Image 1 (cartoon, rainbow, N blue to C red):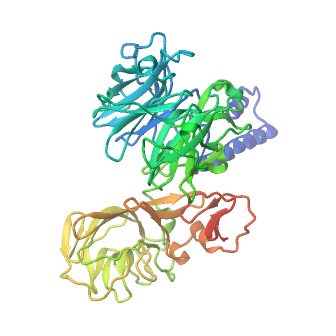
Image 2 (tube, rainbow, N blue to C red):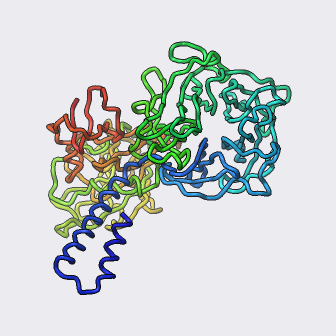
Image 3 (cartoon, helix red, strand yellow):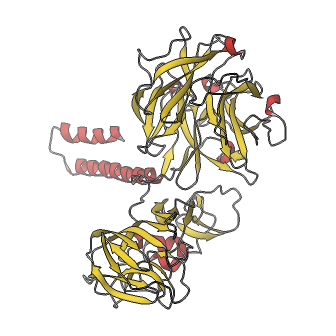
Length: 597
């Protein structure tokens, strides 16, 4: 693309004569192609990504999230390179973990291999290997720490050497805490996998601790993930570093105890090298996928993992870093889509990154025309009580296309938890558009305070009062007169669409405990609006297709006659892509339209 643009500019600049009609047409055509390609690329990049996500040598990745919202990735290297990303897709170099003065030296002439990053207490602790090829008894494991994940790590020290601890090829460390808070280090490479308990600060071996064996010599690159009742031992088997001849692949076994026994699906023991393969090479795409990072869970509850591999198209770039989604079957075993690395997939759903997903704007719920027969848009499933407090931020749009605040003298509900008797909690903008109104316990206040278009408001609402931008108004109500409906967002009952958007809502129980926190977002190419509850970690979706308003979102949901033979990807109603080899019966989105399977 860059070359095509430069070629167009070259033709334009270096033409010795005034461009004739044919030359002008050629230039216009080329530039139009460039523009179309740019638009197409931007649209594709917004919701999906392509592997590898780091297109340089980045072997043995390890990842941690910092309080600044960034994920930090580290890899094998002389000074341990550090990259960071907000979305797990776009990574930028931010330096190295060590410099020439702080770099550990306890194994002469050794490289630093397979770091493992962790937050222990208030310190970022990195465990690492020091080794040379073939130095299986002289290699060892050390640790260093830092106050932040991107500054220089210091106080690097040795934990043990292979010959000292009696485990050949003591490399590839991995740190984990059990449910009781005990700290463990696991390590090993094709000479059995061992674990040992660490001190309370994690910076040394616990006094008197004895090593224990959890797996045989089939694997290296130990990673243990706790999910539900099980600890999942994921390791890498095969040869890691021989480009197209690499046989590296990921395998798994699990145990209800961190110390084992770990068993495969067939019931065989990991100490006898019984594992299940979960990720293998794709000869047309990547060789030797393995040595995975920690599992990262996104805001949609999806699990993601990074690993290294050789690009089949350019193995000389080294072991690049790949990102893939980890899924779980009905028996709780992890698997990957097709058991192979993915070339393209939907990006992780992560809060606050508007270049990828829009959390602060839900554009397709605009109401700009005559009123229609609306029903609930987003049903939260929560029934407010008399002590419930709602806290939210909303933005009020401009007047509609007819330059009138509203049409047909309809109230515009921001949120509603009331029934057809107007009983409950509901905040709205009055028919004139110049006042906030409030339904509560069957009581209607049609003019609490001034309302402005194009303004962002912070609102707290209870049965007894409502606070708008810091000013409190009492409602003179203490009880509901009838049973309330469940709380909904963006709409009240029929024909009350709101001219605005909600940025987020918190629901507090009578004890002031936060019980729901709703975050709006757009998902995938169809622009389907959803709310995600960060407390229950579930999505809420539109109650019915009529609650969508106008535009492409309506088309995406209402059209149930869409052909089911399309090759487009299949999405569930949360907007998350599903494995469509054998989907369960239900309602899905395919090609931007609703399909019933």
